[in-house]
Length: 438
Picture 1: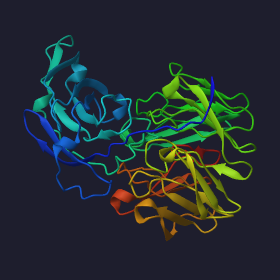
Picture 2: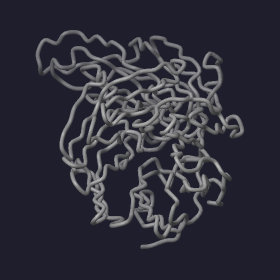
Picture 3: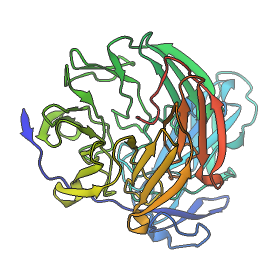
Picture 4: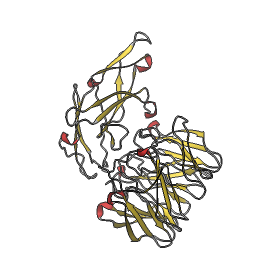
């Protein structure tokens, strides 16, 4: 059933991990409302974590999130506090040791957005087993969870697209369209590199969290037919688009799932399959010849907003979901030679308008926290370097990053380390970076 684009609303709850207190009977976490950039040492009221919030406990035999097993789920009965008692979680000597971590959601379902990872891995000791058939009982409440961490941006609460191992960090992913080869460097495994073949000529990479499990799935889009195909055949495939339609996947209905979405520049037509409405088609017209699609969550309400950028004039136009999809224009910002790279560089939730000029390596950013005052003067990159900004260090601020196709060199300015430069080699000629969606 076809439907014209209509107004949608969402409620976004901003929460902030301010401190943690550990005791043998329970794990107490203090939270407070935050604009995303406040001092993490300031304590607040536990009442800011709503009663009924979901808490999940995971176990892994190795320090790799990809191997994690969900042990238990609990809901907060009192604001800000949760408790796990003894749990039996399997049989066999493989459970004699390993790692545990916790995820907290300020909503009653893990498929909703605003998930908050509050603990990295911690050592866990289990009494040796007399036989492989003996169940293991672990008093989780008695464990000491170390390295409790906070993240700064829960205003937007967006999924981390490009997070293939579920650790909340962007993974570095490459795709070779000529061969269909993928190279995946997983942050949860110490950036161990894995690979495979999926796709090939005529197939474009369109990764996203299509099932709402907060782990990015590999998908490809066949432009000739409009088929969206999942690497895992257990995941749903879709039909949307075709020749002249470019993929612009995002969460347009605000339910935490990636929606298959396309844009036809010749006509300005947008269309997406709404996951919250049984994948009904929603479509509308916005843009047209010369206008490149640059969708992002520009108002921080958890919905991907349709947006276009006209490079010849430097004009931006946005349809803000939080304002009944009213069109907002930026005036001239950019022009020939400037590439639009919107992202949340200041960690407050809304995507910031930003540009990259390859000929000079100049980055120009309009930060929403400063009233969109232009921040210029950053030179990072240059000829042969593509911009690949993303949150690579998990602090919820997007990090400026570049990729050199000729050599496979990646360079990232890590916001969590005062924008210290980090570099690796991955990919090279024929490989396209896809982990950040650019």
